[in-house]
Length: 298
Image 1 (cartoon, rainbow, N blue to C red):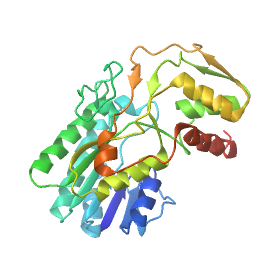
Image 2: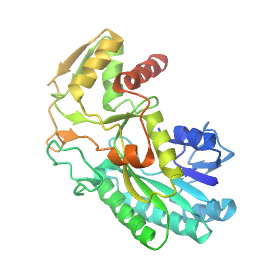
Image 3: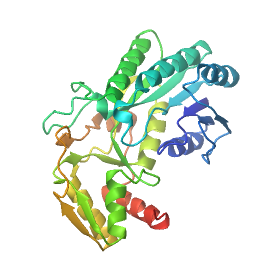
Image 4: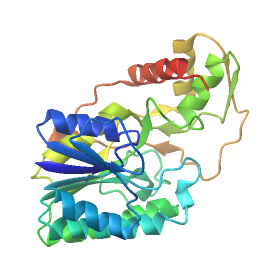
């Protein structure tokens, strides 16, 4: 199948492309800049540009679509003003894809669609959705559009992605921030660390999206996550054990009042319907992060 992958330059795009190619697909990638991801060829352009969307679908006429692109600027994307533009662009891309004979689409959603004040229960796909950010709201609106298209005969899977860790992360994110402070033999500042999170390695996430795409009989929503919850303090302690230097300063930064205490996915559907199993446990995932930052000091 000829598959167009958007957002191929992101954290999980290259891994998803590699998995799709290994499965025998002809992969075409597009992003705003040149990339090194494996693909038949790469197209540079802005998906917020209607003419580019029109051209790439008309020219390539893909059978499959893996749509990962969105606004992802760290610290900005949650309430960025262009979130509605990304929803509209995604709807237009899907419409053009289907108008030109597209058969199978898989779209990246987000755990931000869920109600984060859910106590200590793992979030299954049927959990209440009450997004607290513009990003989550627009992702949820697009999810509803995709589900409506499925009732009209489309084949669209919606992967709700939880938290990632791995090489190439923004240094301001939790794992890189703690890692780099410890590598500098400094005191790593953090909140209380009591918050429980579900971290998935970027390579596992890319593989999971590829496997979901491959399951043509699956339509609808599926969580993309490790399914394992760890407190942020335990994650920081594990990084400290791997690195062997520096100190941790839990409580040196305040807990954010809007920060959910527990954010962990139920991945029963991903495991049982898709057959996916993560390759990286938390320690192995964090080790790749440490190794990458040791080789790419900031």
